[in-house]
Image (cartoon, helix red, strand yellow):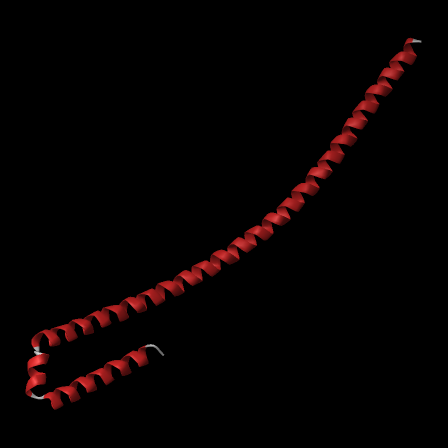
Length: 124
């Protein structure tokens, strides 16, 4: 009779160990499937991030180049503005216009045409 009880206990223990191993195997397989799925999602996210980073880097380089060009053009325009301001400060347009109105009108019209021509060329 004790042998029967010992056998039942042994079978119960072996069954418990086997069931525990089976449950561990199933949970491990489920965890592996979840981790594989998450890894695939992360790889796609990393690839997308890398593409966005490359695009932003190239865009930053283009913007830097354009900014340098515009800064140079701004400096040139400021120099030209200074030259024009100095010329206007040196000349007395009102006195010259009263003295020779036809000549001053012609000079002003030529300069205005030159300025408008330069503006239309720079905006194309």
